[in-house]
Length: 460
Ligand SMILES: Cc1ncc(COP(=O)(O)O)c(C=O)c1O
Image 1 (tube, rainbow, N blue to C red):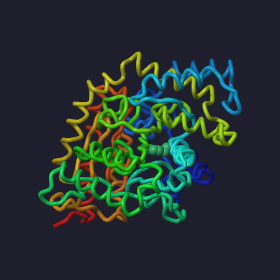
Image 2: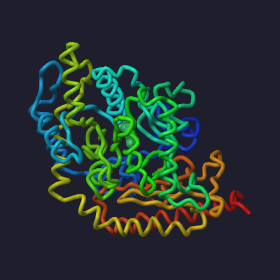
Image 3: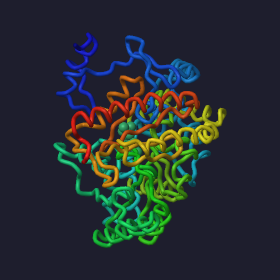
């Protein structure tokens, strides 16, 4: 029986990433409030939010300082824009702060409202810059299978997940997808992780040769592939990849929408994996998801060439009404100041061994094939046959079932492609809550094991 709120919900709300037919039977989990790393439903049941919402609320819920900053800014200047020679202090101060903490040299910062908008803007900026350099054939963007870069038409084309393309007539042809460097599944017998990286990057170079380096405007990467299943880069991968891109003069776009602001135990994922991009997309933890805001940070060289081109043709004809919205900008600035004042990166480093220990313990669980962890993000892949590294038939919905058991046990996790269950809690999580989170999840996993046995889904 659906509650009154659940009935009203299915009659009116079109839910993202949902089997809308099934939702009519199960109803949505209607969340009422949040405090710290926990959210509460209407009956007052608490859930540890092991996904920080959508990999986003790094400071957790109920951060009063941010509410106050938003209210104050709303009273002072509720709206202001950056079009046609206008500006305001929150946008200027935020751009300066981002340049200060950026791991690569930045000229100018462009503001948008979501990760998708940031990545759509990236594509246009790299086309604009290539045209300005007279390299008018550079139109293709290389992405990777299982990448996630958003859902607007262009960013969804970069996304390498079938669920984002099927029935949407995507991807558009400018997007070229390289192989996904997932060692666990794609590594060959006897191949080391380093050898696997060399092979993946050789495949990439062959793809560049096939397409023609002078037709490629950029390559986009997530340091850790998030929505594609928390896939960590194999050892040596980024060092080899950046060499190949430099050789072919292909700019690198770093999508730090999940990895930015401390998730890996470094301020940015590119530092954790030792590479430098030409431009970077950030969102989510940029404002701890208290308000929608994202940004594209551009190298001095790209900033200059875009500036020159706007002079030549008369305008930089791009921007959103809410680019650098003063209230969102003020909240983002305060969020980053809080990260600095409370030294959030050191906190992550302090608690990440406890987090890693619990995630990696699941590698021995009979239902788990692979367990991975980096900083405060991790995942387990459910498998009917550990030895064969097999996957369950997707139609059986094993990952979704385990996530449902987890919800009943009081922990919110996210089932991703190939029955991988992701963990990405608020960065402020304490060790006691990490223990509680994984105690609850372990009970759910054991219930999942009983269920797959009952359904006869295990191999042998
Ligand atoms: C790496 C990455 N890029 C881009 C996006 C898209 O962001 P948004 O949902 O804000 O459009 C996401 C969202 O999860 C993401 O994880």
